[in-house]
Length: 552
Image (cartoon, rainbow, N blue to C red; front, side):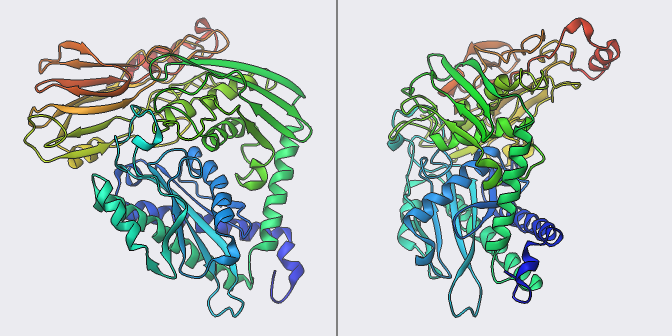
């Protein structure tokens, strides 16, 4: 409410100006996180989320920088925080956190930090907003980041929703527990302070904005933003034909293939996405908590329906996602979930398959979809006989996306996560690794009028020729991305060993931890995206251009 003119807070022009300011505030919040984070996954790849919430825990605005899995799961997570710590029980200087997969963003490596914002010199001591941020911490103990666990207890330290700071004082007991249980305590603690710092930066900017515009709080603005977004999203949905459509996708998962079954219903009051018929929980760590399923399934809808409507509690509310408890997309505690992204990031393509008919075919073909995220480990205590310093480094790489309506798929692009590939120099600086090759995987995009995006080939070795381990979370090895409307499939991913001459000398699995022997190197060939449309209809000049650019 405006202190001078209460009705002015609801004026459309003023609301738009305040909305733009909120976007600037949360982007500053995210950039603070990137600048201060210790983990390369945040600094270099952008594996994070940041957003501002009202007193009721409704997400108002999110930073552009961030992943859908983090952003949309965080939107639900803040509600869990407030169930345990109602907003009226919090005070200035409190900072809350958790990495609980079922109350956060799906696995133990992601910490979510929530900070209430209080106006200074306010005799009522009233919280006016909350800031939340999530980032991927490289190591949280246990088996380490990877799919080999059989229960969440094996995957690392699980921190329930609680205090990181209370009345401005750090929770030293929690800090000591973390330091004693992770392989890189400096980075882990540094990342938590980074999350608190980015929320603080957002709070300072928000309070300055409230003063500038003469506002006591965000309540009226929140109602306007959420109401407008909900109405705009419903208007877009009502342009589509009503009905129910279904789609299925089979993926590699850990040992046995997994079927992802989806039905999507379009109605007057929104879109219902249901995953009944999906495979049951897996024995290993590729299971997905429901909040992460909801995050990526709703993102699949938002990519093609109302994609210019702000992503917040209003627009998310009309896309409702469900999955039967006990299936791999609604895995109950204590299922292992460390590599939940390997399955969860497939969901936008599953949902897009449902929307192909109601949208008149205006959807892309399937892509590589899941990130290719090896975790490299080595050195004394980790590898028998190793002499070097111990290291753990997590990198992200991408395959190709599917052919799009009127355009080729994107090469080496992480859709749907939006995470950037880790630069070679960063990985080599963080660990005694040499990346001998990083190049386009020519011909890996599926054929079509609009070809699929190509993947990449990377070759990893130890700087001193020692053995090292790699924890692999790679899908699309046995089940490549499918084309649409007559387009061909993308190339399947491959992972194997070569000797120092580059001669292939062994095969590796797509999932799980394995050792690369001394003197050997690991080669990863990421999957290509599926093609879209009849290959015979492709523009010959596009084919010539691809050959010139080394993509065929």
